[in-house]
Structures are given as C-alpha cells and as structure tokens.
Length: 362
Ligand code: SF4
Image (cartoon, rainbow, N blue to C red; front, top):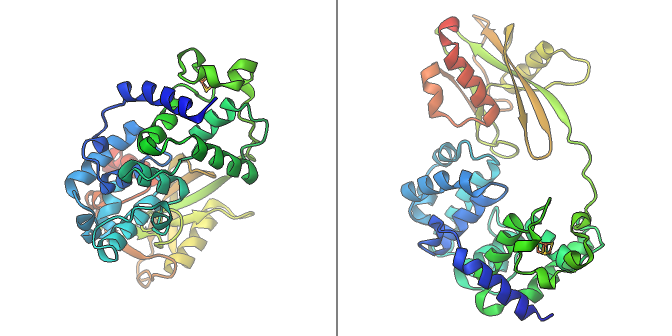
C-alpha cells in the first residue's frame, strides 16, 4: 500500500476534528517550541494553564530570555520535570543572543539547543516551518509497529532506527506538520496501548496487526526492571524567631534550582534521624535537634519512587550559621514567605500540611 494513501487517510481523519489549541492559533516557532517542551511527558489538559501563563507573561522569546531562572521556575512550579524549565530558560537566552531572537529552522540546528532532542526538533521544524522531518515517540512507534505487525522489540536501538526510517518514508513532504500531529493523535486516541479502537481507525485497511488479530501483542517491548524506591528524610529546622530553614538545590541535576527542606536519601544501616544529622552537616555544616516526625509523603519520579519523612527540628542556639557546602543557597523564612519560592511536589505537600497545622506549631 502506498505511503501516500496512508498519509491521505490519516490527514482526512485528522483535519476535520483537529482540536483548537492555543498554540495552534498563532503559529510561530516560539509558541510551537514552548508547547512542545511543555507537552514532553505531560498531558494537554495539564499543560494548557501553564502555556497560557507563560505566553501572557513572556509573549516573545526575548522576554523569556530576560526573566531570571527563579521567575521561570516559579511559573513552572507544579508542571514537573524541572530540567525542562532550566533548559527552556537556557534555550531562550541562546536564541535571543546568538540567533537574534529568531529560531533556527532545521532539526539539526534545533538539536544543538538545550532540551531539544530528535523528536522535539522534528516536531518544531515540521510544525513551525513545514520542514519534512518525521517524529517518532511512543505513540507513533506503537502505530507503526502495529501497521507492519512488527515482531522485533521496540526497546532495541536497531528496531527504533528501523522505525525512524519507516516514519520518514510515510511522511508527506507537503503536509509534514499536520501529518506528524495526526499520527501522534491517532496513537493517543485510537491506537491506544490497551483496547485500540480499530473500528474507528482510518488506517484499518492498511493495518497488518488488525488483519492478523495481533494488536494486543504489538508492539513487542521488553519489560523495564522494577522501579527503585528510596526513603528520604527532610528537616524543617526552626530557629528562635519562628523561621524555618530552606535550601536551594544545586542548579544541575534532579530538581536543580528548586528549593526544599534540606535532607537527603537514607543510607543502609542508618536511622532517619541519623540520616538527617549527616545530610545537614554535609550540605549546610549545621547540627540540629531532631524533635518529631511531622508528616510522610510518597512521590514518584520518572525512574524511582520516594517516601519523604519530614521532621520538625530545632536549630541549636549558639551554633555557627549554615554554610553553602552542598546547596546553591539557603534562607530563613517565615511560613507566609514560603510561597515566594519554587518547591518540588513532595515539599509542596509538606508546606500544605504546615499551613493546615500552623496554629499547633507556632
Ligand atoms: Fe492501531 Fe487498530 Fe488502527 Fe491498526 S487498526 S493502526 S491496531 S487502531
């Protein structure tokens, strides 16, 4: 079956029901880039309010480049995967200074910018500039593996290379942007991982998995190992003035640049209290009295899960002030000032609990 017929059927299905999304109104590279970064591993409904806030506050890439990292992180707070926000800020600054505020047009050039991999580069180049480069994400892989009834493991690099080629071969050069969005949407809405809606699928007549009734076992994908789980202790260290100590994480790495109640991962053989004493010495060179468990929060990251145990602690009077040994910065703040800082999800749950129980603590 020719690639052209598949593309035509897909576009005929997609175009009449194309969803009215704000980044589709003003089609420029800045809005396409912003939406694509936000949509990485995040649902459209979650992204919408964040996208609108960013576009209102920073309507151009130059204005985003002029913002501070703290301002960008604060606006991003709650959207998760904070490396995206840091890269967003870096890329805005590069586009503004190196490229004079104008985004480069080819996937190769776009991939030199922080936070833009092969998939995102192709999405931006095709949607914003009509560049004929195919996209391949988990949704597209699933559609292609079923169309061809592919028996190879899609977690293997060689299979992925084969799928990139197949995706490119199917792409109509004169409608690359719409086609890429169409095949992704087909994967999300119709060719779903479980119970694909084959009776509503515009590609049913071309689908080998449908013809052979193998949809349920396609794509073939090796199972990931079990997600690791860690216990983390966090200290809410209070001083005599009723202020609590918060620390800013180093800029590189997980949750880089975000603020937190200081602490860290429990090591083998130590209690949570010992863990806190060790972490506070290593990161801030302080000693505290660990008083009581305040709350426990469970949280899942992409590759691991944590149980965060937040403890009420007292700063020992007469001890020297904290030092920035393993943190970017630190601050003593009143509870009502916490809202000015950007925190990760687990710490925000602790803060919410703090507000709920505030009368008991102060
Ligand atoms: Fe997916 Fe079914 Fe369509 Fe094949 S017919 S592409 S399995 S939804």
